[in-house]
Image (cartoon, rainbow, N blue to C red; front, side, top):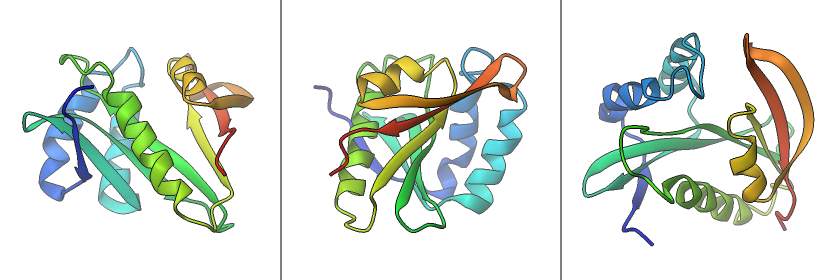
Length: 151
């Protein structure tokens, strides 16, 4: 296992995270999602984390909570496609699952992703519940997935 450090997002991470996000365009995210991420980072963060190795940012990922008070959502997960980050996505996903499991009121964990990350989340214990073609942008489908072993 690599020596990853996961810590809360800081505003000074913003520019580098936008740069890292762009390494995923257009292979995993649509160009239009850069503006959505900017809005998220500036206005919609609840719990958001970065993962580093040797003081280098590798990626980021968050948790948001639905109004129903029992549902948590994994949000805005991405890694730098120009760096070797084998295992970092799994590490930050497991970190968030472990945090959510410590919240007794949370009964459901979901992720809204695309077909490009569906296989990754399936390996983490999520199953696809719904598919909506061209939801994020043309060619970027919504795959709504739910975690199977939260409690």
